[in-house]
Length: 419
Image (cartoon, rainbow, N blue to C red; front, side, top):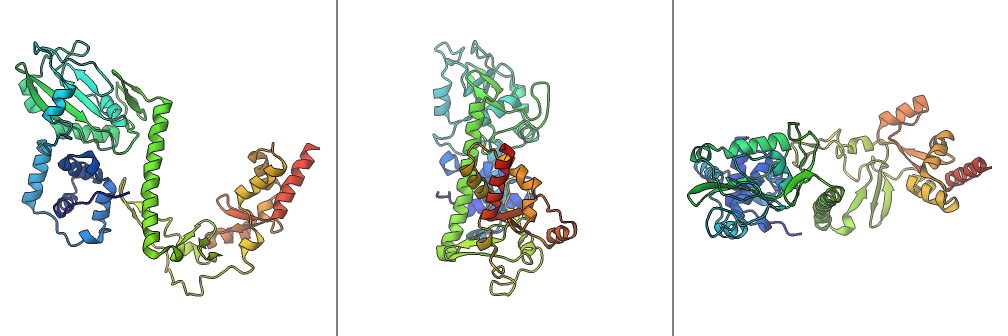
């Protein structure tokens, strides 16, 4: 998946916007995307985090933009002066196509659809913004009567006093995400009409984070033809599937890039729970003494929503040729070859009707995890191992490896219970 490249000027603007501390990463990405004018050239907020944390080497030497340049950029954004492209949803040609005016000039020749909502007054419902954001975007047309499509207009004083920044602040406060709403004012038959464009949200689903008379906290709205209503199961399922797919592609792309950078023959996967390291040439286990020091990967904390993780190293990590990294004596993986899923599969092959809950109950009642005839616990910290030695009770989060004897024991116990 090819990422859209940023120009030097865009990087300098981003650095200056970050320095002001007035804008969140998602908001900055929206401003850059608006300046580009094409959805196909959009960047995501993760790129802003990369720049903020100096994670892209080719951008490191680019200085922040001057105050004059960044002020001009912000002003152009606020005034809606970016992009006259035909791809701009507020381009005159686009508006003429989606909002045709009748021959007499008093009505719009439209119907309210999944992409158009008309309001007589200057009322921009947050519920409608959320609904459009969760679908494919849409338009709110102020100054047009609902159902009759009669053009009544918005008073000039209200148009002049309208504050887009205030609307965007309300969106962030009540929806919890940044949706780059913009608008255009048109004079039709000597009456002012305000046309607001709500793009599809970059992060879906958009969830109401507060309650009001019109909506409840936690509600998810979706735009259906002619109305905003609580999202249906099929639409929500699609949004979740798309989000998982997008995240998976992003994560997979990152890991594939790292693997290709170091070479497939030099790459391996570390299971932080068991200490197993598996690569092209085989697998080994990192000793329990070293595992606590590797937990710096798990200590990653997000500096802000949507940002890259800030990793914290716990202890001193020694090089790979140190005696601290070694194969566990008697190789646990050879003695205990099965994980929990393997055990369930083996038992079900003998007893197809058994449920996993029954298997788990036997493992627990027979204390199989604590019996080295059947299993071996994999500790990730000395503290957990020490607690186990002192109490004889295995912490719930500790995983185990099992052998074939464990499967035989569970099958035997199931047979006894049936008798």
